[in-house]
Length: 427
Image (cartoon, rainbow, N blue to C red; front, side, top):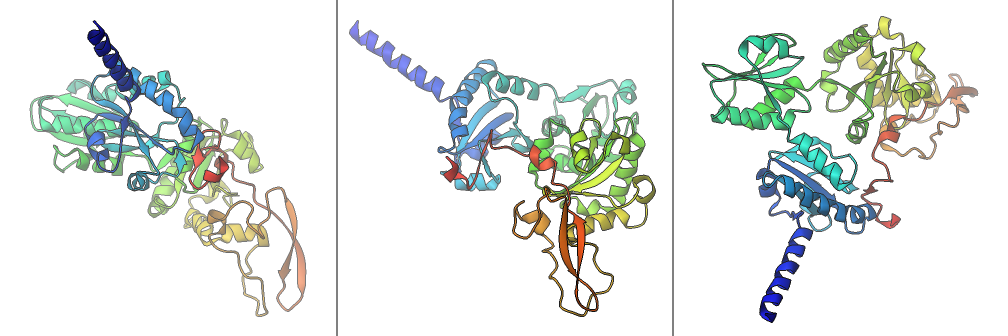
């Protein structure tokens, strides 16, 4: 009797321990195998000393137990101790704790999990992520279902490796592009279709069984060059760290948006890795407009937000945007430091004075330095006196308006949810 009771107690202790360790401990050795071996993985990159990480630990454990109770296979919650697994943390550029990254079929998504940190919220997120990512339609109904930049695959059946690759690619990119499948006799064909178009605008000529090649093809042609910013995705967009070239427009004004998209594609395609091209509902994002001294009555408004200051496009949007090099020069003036310099020191002289003059501002100061860098006025100083050299000798006093502070920097990840790397001494 005592032996049987002891066995029951031992078994109970084991089950309790198992339930408490439902989250997979990931390290540099097993990370890739766990990520690639599941359809969906949420990874908690944490630091033991971070109070937000400590608060999340029991919630994440409970969430994992709930998720395993509903999804027996294909889904995992894992965690990485960033101080112990330095290589893995560096691989994903972790700079705040806890960072919750999402992986679908072995591929890291651009977006992180930024929802409520509760077991039920994690479970609901998993449910939504595992909804079908492909819409099956009949061939004769295809035109009714194709929206802008739809990925359409034609297959003789669903049992082949080609459809499996298409399915994997769709789970990775379903947030960016709609995927549609048509089952009909004939060869496999995959392409990108424009709205209501039955014929493909771009065809995928790679290996139809290679989902990675398919992902590359779709990413280059499907994900929009100009993205919409909302309050739901603002944190993720700001965390990418690239300055915004942003068009504020009325939600019904599609003409200005099309004009902006066309000009960005024509003049700034090479700037894609250095700047985010964004459009925003000017009625919802009225606060940034107010920072610029504008209102809904001034829409459309084009500006750059460098995450330190905001700069208005020089000229009239409707009349000047399409002028040769006007938009390209506006962006080039940010990178060269001219926008920053002219706001603080006045317009650059057309001729360089021969006498000794003030050194120009650091070209990268507006992007790289902090908001309280020495010698840089704050946005509180709306009008500031400045001494500028005058050709022929002497000094002349000018008054220049300082640029408004960034409005979108405030939408970046905040200290009420994360501890940032390097701020260990805060705790």
